[in-house]
Image (tube, one colour):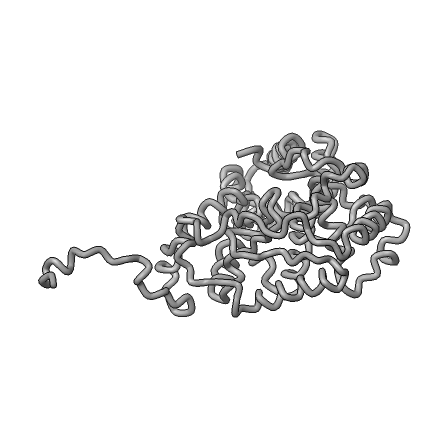
Length: 355
C-alpha cells in the first residue's frame, strides 16, 4: 500500500469520477464540462417517447425501417448514414435552459416541434436506407443530391412549388431538403396534404412521394444502421467553447448583431434639446423612402429589405441612439448601411458576407 504522500500522486481515472448533477451544478462548472462528460442519454427521457412515436408513424405506413437515434451536437443525419442525431441539450431540462440562454432558443424543445424535426431527419435516413435519391425518378422530381450545400440559401417565400414544413422555407435549400420536407408532410398523422396543397405544384411532389413510399412498403431497408457521427460521447469540446463557436457562426441571429456598427454612426443616450433626434424616430419617418431606395440600389425585394430594417429599428430603439446630423445626412448613413447589408446578402446570402 502506498503511503499518503504517494497516494496523492496517483492519477484519478476520469471514468471513476461521479457523474455531475446537471440539476444543481453551478453554471460556470457546467460550461466547463466537455460534451463527452455530460451524463445524458435518450433512454428514460421525454425523447424516448418521441422516437417511439416516429417509429410508430413509419410502421403505420408499412415502412419497415426504424432509424436509430443518438445524441449529437445538433439535429443531423450524417451523409449516407441511415441514423438520426438529436441535439444533446434536449436530453435534460437544465441543458435546455442553458441552450435558450446561450442561443435564444432550444430547437425542438416541445413535443410538436421535436416531431416535426424527427420526421424531417427520418426523410434523410430513409433516403439513405433505401438509396431513394439514386433513383432517376427521384432526381427528375427533386434534382440531384450531388448539388453543393451552401452555408445559407435564398428562398422565394411565395413559391407554391415547395411544401412548408420547417420554418424559413427549408424545402428550397437543396434537392435533398426538398424531398425530406415533402416526406415529412406526407408522414404527418392527420394531415390532409391533398387538400392543404390543392392547386400547388408541390402537390405533384407529394403524390410522387406517396407512390415512392408504396414501392418500398413492406420491404426491408438496404442498410438499417450506420455510423453515428458527431456523437457527443466523442466530442471533447467544453460547453463554453461549443457555445462560443456557435455564437460566432450564428451572429446574425442575435439582437446585438448591428450594435457596433450603429454605435459608430450614432450616439447613445436620451435626446437633448432640438439638436439631437432619436434615430428610431428618424427610421420610422423615412421608412418608405429607405425601403424604396435600398431596394432600387440593391435589386432586392422590399420585403427582404424590410426584415433588416426592422432589426435596425429595434436596436436603435433599444440602444436609445440619437444623432445631431441633419436628417438628410443621417438618412443617407442609414441607407448606406442597409445597402451594404443587402449587397452582402445578395452575393453571399449573409448580411456580413462570408466568414
